[in-house]
Image (cartoon, rainbow, N blue to C red; front, top):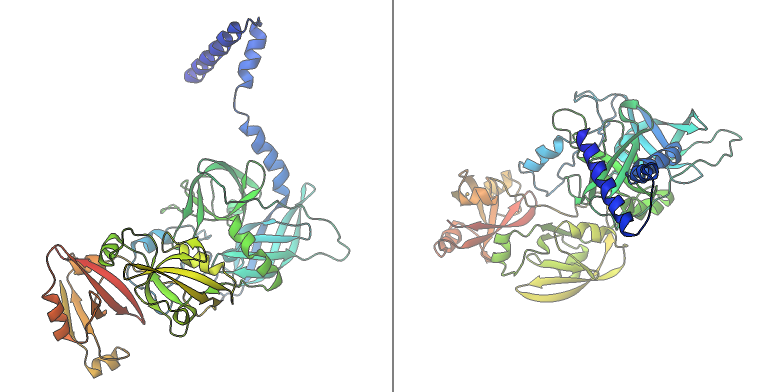
Length: 493
């Protein structure tokens, strides 16, 4: 209290001195009023937002069959050919809020979350995990000061971005125009901007919390299109699907998850899907019920400093092609394993995570320029993009996990038992934890098919190439793992 008083006194004195320099004469009463008006007016802005935006925010409750798995913001599991190595970030992600008050194995039949109306017809945006597996969807809407319950129908959903579109079922003769929120833009958001979250945490309807944009473009392991807004506005169970609003009253995000540690509640780190992602798929959801995305047909990995050195790259920007899907668009366009994709359709690819998002936003059947670095030279390829189907995997991420390397020849019988396509290469039978190979990510069960871009058909090739390795250099391995191939650079200590 004393510090606040002292601060106000200093501020009043400065204002008084400034007015004296202008020759103004003011009374103590008017000066005190002036000092009071210098206090932040942000609270008034939040009051107005709460009054105007609250009516368009709804409580979403669902009922599902007992056997239906209501995953609620599920942790993505690796598909065919994707890395299944232990992932420290997976453990981190498992601590994120998943819209459940408990962590029991038995999923509840009922679920609850939030949503917001986006047009006068009653279309509502929410999270896919809020309505996943639902047999019945009920929304609770604030109608002129009293709550009214409606059933709703699923119009379309997109599990890859965790977005769903539902629509209120009108009763006979009901021609009212529903209150709705304006969709803003998340493109020019800046860290530090004020934001307001509205939702139904723990079933407490129309709860308003305030915070700032803490970070942008966060990847939390939810999928290939991660680009979350991080905020410290309080989000708790029940907030999922609700709007994140800027001080102009426009929706700039969909509240989706929080980091909760072991508490299950808010610790000041929340995540919202940028509204531009929702706006980009809204037309597809309305017209088709699903989202149409482009497919390139490559498996890619992040370029580490060691990989950049091994490939003779000046920097670690771009996406390294670990494998090319046979007869896929990239294969037909001339993309090869070992290429580094640096531009796609005139857009820069600065990091591996950029490519799936850019490709997904490309309409199928369109022909685009793909710029690659191959053996140190730039090449531009023309690729005809195809439709991404659910069974296709757009990316594989090489994880840096726990070398000392023991390998063996692959016999025909071993190849058959391990379901390998051929007996070419050498099988990694063991790695020593803490040594170079293990630290770089090579593990037991991997098949080495190349070393420093030279083919390894058997142990004779492996030992021959190993003798040329010098201390302090890096060895570039091409590894076959789980139906796909990845590059791993191992620094020889």
